Length: 77
Image 1 (cartoon, rainbow, N blue to C red):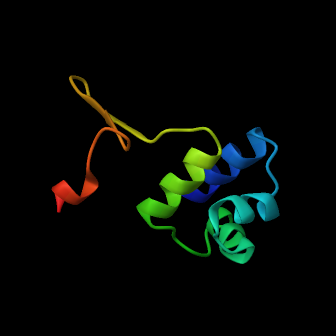
Image 2: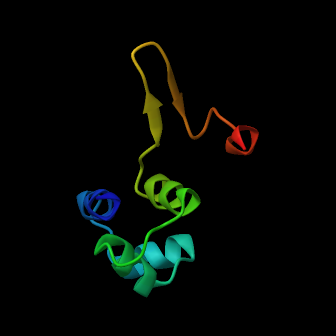
């Protein structure tokens, strides 16, 4: 499922896999495998791709909202 979201963000912004690879230093083969569900990306990879495509990752509940820019994920571990 996350692969479809990553592909959606990339295609919506008219970014080729090869260009995204250059922008993120993630091998094009890995981007393809993420999008096809053959390889699971880490949260850091998801965040990197989302940011390069102009998206932020947010966690929303009924009474709270945080995003990857306002929370230090290392504090959660």
